[in-house]
Amino acid sequence: MPDKIKTVELNSGEYVAIKAKEIIAVPMLSVIENSFPQNTDVEKEYRQGFGNLLSEVFQNYSNIKYSNNTAEIAVEMIWLTEAVQNQSYKAKIRLFMVLRAVAQDKNSALNYVNRLETACTSVLHLYKYEAESIAHDDMDQLIGNIPDQSVYAVVKDEREERFQNAIIPACFGFDVFDAYANHLDSIINSLIDYPNCVISIQIIPTHLTEEENAMVTQISQALGMLSKGIMEQGVGNISFSETETLANTYKHYVTNRNSALFMYNIVVMGDDLSTENIASKMLGYINSDTSKQTAVKKIRLNKDKYLETLI
Image (tube, rainbow, N blue to C red):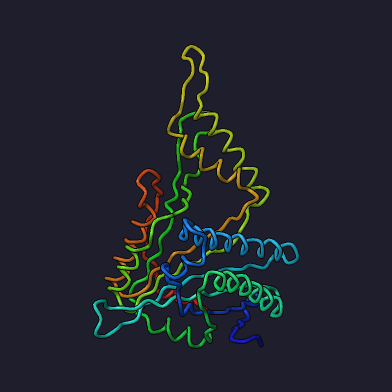
């Protein structure tokens, strides 16, 4: 078996392969600035680099789907806090990357995880991060040490939009996460106050089916028409300005139908106080730009059902 990769056979007969890596060293900005040309925005370069990693993960997904339509992959970032003594802060933060693949046979699942690991490790090394593999049993023990009193998920708030017209009486409404350039200081400062808690951010490459693409295009066209205005006999041009934001959301998916697309899970686990406050910090970060509000909410999960899904 490949080094430190765990495989599990599911009830469906498929296999899950899982590989965990701990990021043990993060580069200092003052040090790495010297390796870039003068006046380079190093933070922007790093954001672009990890954006490229997401594109590479999606390309791996596309290649896998071409030969194995039922396979799935996922990349999870885990921030785990542990208590410290004799420090001005209460907890240190450990960073982990967990790679998963689901396939019809064991060898394929292992192969897909190895491909994911190669892509992720390459970017980490390029940007001077140091990472090492961690045995899955050790990862299980670390997660098992986290109190499971409370589990929160941060989710986009979905809704039904009604427009009172014949062209499109109603449609499914949601927002798109923007590209965030803000620092994570507020979340980090919250984490170091709460030992023994976890933030898990999982991204899962996906794509729209032909039926979904057709429906998104149809709704986008209808919303675009309404936002620009329609002619009513005896009244003139009537504009439905409330459809403009939603029209732009649907247009985003039409424009990027062949680009990288991800589902996501954001979960906070720990004791009651820490999860409540950290989940609130996540909401605040997502909506830190008041000009581009995203409708999100936190929901409390059934901890027993959630923990059953952890492998």
